[in-house]
Image (tube, rainbow, N blue to C red):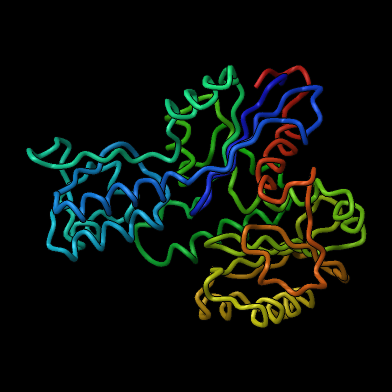
Length: 343
């Protein structure tokens, strides 16, 4: 594993680290770029401005901004056509996609603006590296947030059910996948683009990355709460050593500083209930069977960490809070891969 490209794909940015064996992490090359969902949303909005019907093709990717842009496009009485694979970005239930007004077709209708859907633009990444005389590494690890395939019911509940299964063992390296579970369809889409890539959930990568800060790792020996305030999602974990004993996940836009502090105080005492979080607009909250004890130390990372109370420790693994997910990917990869294995 001499060189690894670690890519953490969020709702607003994609954070990229080119890690090289023997190089100081601070000296490894980094990029913080707009996420593909932001770029696709921009292309849809431009088509809306030009009053053009659009044809979405490619594959399943993260929704968020691009889904909102599709809804706005339809609201302007403009046509949206999509392949089945691309349409799954909008919802796992294709009947609901049709009900939005999207027409499913595998062929581009005439006079439509073609817009490619994918979480990674590999030609663009390769070109960006080539412009600085850098080659694309053979080893790639990618983090995306995957709700799981949920055509009926709440995808927030479905996603948190996945977390509750994880809490039975609580080892982050176990959810860095070479072959992801079949219901993690966004990760499967990454594997179709990059068959040799390892994939991981963004929230798990952020938790593992925070532990790369020596202060966090030291305090976690006795019990710590690791919070990541992302652009769309906020996740918190009760951690002892490297074992995750509890998880809390909410939508960042639902939380101001007081609400976040209140939730985390209750989470630390294991008093926050999953139904309460769900009713408040979040995903849920859960605890391992052996989650006893106190968690007196709180650290925070993430691009919207400014909402957190000032007394929480601002974790900066290798001096860079924006690359927390990338460092988490690398740490999980080292722990999971036998030394002799080429990734």
